Length: 392
Ligand SMILES: Cc1cc2nc3c(=O)[nH]c(=O)nc-3n(C[C@H](O)[C@H](O)[C@H](O)COP(=O)(O)OP(=O)(O)OC[C@H]3O[C@@H](n4cnc5c(N)ncnc54)[C@H](O)[C@@H]3O)c2cc1C
Image (cartoon, rainbow, N blue to C red; front, top):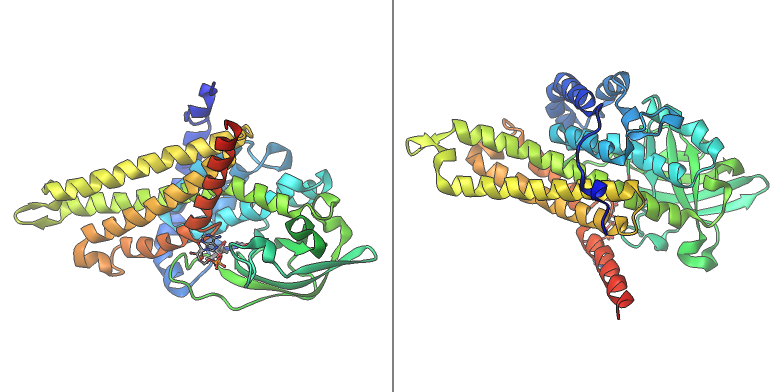
């Protein structure tokens, strides 16, 4: 029997105040800058300073580590709201949590106490270094190694497409400690930015989310003290990575919902004002059909994202399945909604004069990062087969 609390999406009491803060800071600090940040690939440093001042990074962390203890459900609502304004900013904001999650899931109390409070305060940024040039979907094919030498590990390798690389102060890095064990031979390390041998590749010149900086991380004989092995246990890295991705997928889903909602809002505004054939185009029934389908898919994606977040909060056995479903459905919804929002703007939507042009470009990343749509289907399929086998 399903616990009905899991389907109760009432926001906690503090939510209204927090969300109005997110909106206020985003409207005052982010909206005026977002076109320039997109054009010039500027990182949202000033916006993050204001988010930190407003305590918004704390919404993602537990009270014990300087957070607000709001739980994952409220965190997805906050990232959804930022996603409505700028997906690049939401991505880099969310990547702080992504980089912190391996420490939250697998770190010792000392590691949590050392690093998490600075993330919660917005004083330090984090990044998550899993992907490599030849190991994207195929994570276990990674080549980065960590070799124990006395009381240190020596890391060598290259991480590819790392959000916040170069901007973050702290990196969760995955590396092989025992090649003979395959995925069970991967470990996770905390690497600080100023460690000798750590450097970054060029700023990737991307189609969208250009305010979010993406670079390679290059590790050349990087010496990491043994106390920075996450959980102080070798060969547990793959489990930390899987748990991290299961927990972070509802965030990606919520950013997708936010972006789709933002594009829908723009479409609604435009179709009410644009007159063709003597009436606002919103009064043409075909336009209403488009808006109806956009609104319906956004609502369905939102409910799935919230459900996944709620299931994660109680560590429900089906949580990973719902996380993958939410990420897949919401990211595909964002493609559909931004495509149609641009279409409803006609030729004007094809220019930078209207925000839907950026939203359309930004949406494209959602079906790629944190596991492509194929990979989400693989994960859901694996669960379906497992469930089916239980009842054979
Ligand atoms: C802007 C951006 C930010 C990112 N941020 C981070 C980050 O912060 N940290 C991090 O670690 N990584 C990050 N990534 C990496 C991202 O998660 C990977 O790009 C993604 O997992 C896909 O890997 P790939 O690019 O190597 O594609 P590939 O794995 O080479 O996939 C190429 C195509 O093959 C398909 N495919 C591959 N294997 C299968 C299969 N088994 N079944 C079906 N289809 C398959 C894929 O679905 C895809 O369509 C980021 C990527 C980008 C572009």
